[in-house]
Every structure is written in C-alpha cells, then in structure tokens.
Image (cartoon, rainbow, N blue to C red):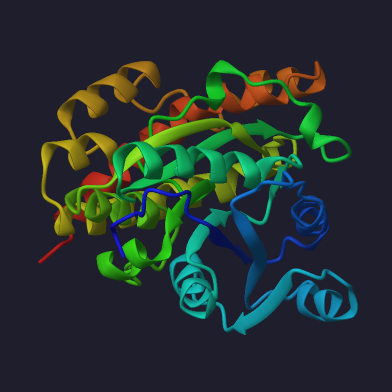
Length: 318
C-alpha cells in the first residue's frame, strides 16, 4: 500500500466529522463541505462526509435525517467522546484517504482540492505516502460570515497532528491503532495518535491553502466555569498521555514541568489573579467589544488551573 506508482495516484476522500450538540454551526460546516469545487483534471475520484453523532440532545440527528446533504452518511452512538466517534467514522469510511475536521469548522470551496494537491506532490516526488497534510485553522466568533476572519498570530499552531484540519491515508491510521479510547475527557487524543504516527515515520506537510474557519461564540464571563473544567479535564488526559509516552517532549506539551509552574505562578501572582479578582477587567474588555482580548487575559489563570491540576492528577496515579 505504501508504494506509489510513478503516475499520479487517484484518491477517494472520507471527511470524518464527530459532532455533539452543535447543530447551528454544523449546518454551515456541512453546507461548505457540499460546495467543494474540484478541477476538471482532479485526482479526487469522489468524496463522502461521514458524520458521527456522539449522542446529541439538541435535535441534530432528526434534523440531519430530514435534510438533503448528498455526500453525508450519518452514524450514531451514545455519548462516548470524540476519540470513539472518530474511530467509528474511520472504520465505516469507504475512502482510502481520511480528512478529519471538527463540526464547528467552515471551509472554503477549494478545501479538498488543496489537500489533494499537497498529498499528490509528496506522493509523486517521494514515492511513498508516509505523510499527512495539515491545513490552516483560523479562529473566529463571527457566526454569520466566519470565512471573513483574517489569519491572526494567535491562530498559529505547532501541533504535529491535530484533528481540526488534517488529511492522511486511511491505512496509516489503522496501522497506528486509531485513537486511544482511554481519552474519555477533553484533550490530547489527537496529539497522542500523532506520536504513534511519527514513530511509524510519517511527516507533516503544512497546507495553508486548505483553510478552515473554527467558530466559537464570543467569550463571556458565563463561560469561565466551563473553561476551568476543560482545563482540569485536559490536565487529567495529559497525564494519560504522559503515562503512554513518558518523554520530556510530552511533559513540555502537557505543562508538567517546574518551568510551567513558575511561569504561570508568576503571571497569575500565585493564583491571586483569578476569575474573581479579574472579573471587572474582563467584563470591561467585553463591554468594549474586545472579548478575544478578555479571553487571552483569562488564559493566565486558566493555565494556572491546568498546571496545578496536571500535577495533582499525576500525584494521584498508583
């Protein structure tokens, strides 16, 4: 399977999208995926959109069954998390190449073609498919026109394998063993799979032309309890990640070092700058139309929560 013939290789894309209670933005996501434009000489034979509903309670399933999305195949499961949902999507996919996106990502009409071109360039020049492409992700809180958001410095990512916008030959996912279902809470299941893919010799190719716009609601103070809980979950899953791959690189990623503890301890004044003491400033920024800046400031104490939680979770291990 790894050997690539000299002539250009065709591909069938399976776009795997797990979703949970995201019906409004999922509609924009699927509409964009249905409007893909492929060149007349495209190497893409066809594509399918594999939506895996992870036990949504907002009417997502009934709505999808009533709508007409020609490329969409829907699978349902009880609420088991993104790792299990993505595994189901891969296992049911008919394509030879998997594209992972999230259900709150809205793409441009050349999205599939750009991923195909980047993969093909490597296949033909290197003679193998030990590669995956990673597209650009632009964060936006503009629901009406998410694709109008410009790329920002804060959108830059150094992640090796992140499932927000990535394309890879299906057989490598199967050989690596798919996503580890031990990751039952938020975070790290994609980067952990990335470690295993790297160990198989796969490399990353950046594909900034395959851009997706990741929508999230504007930050408000009501989000803080949920965001704090997410950081605590991410810390617990970070320890699971480290137990599987006990390396310095993973310790750095999950912020389980003295350096991170000192850094966020200093920036948060040992936790004195928190959701209570910073509340007036955060609300003032929101009122001034700067919710993103408010969120970036909140990340100071959110990271302090995370660092403390990761050390606590590690101490609790037998």
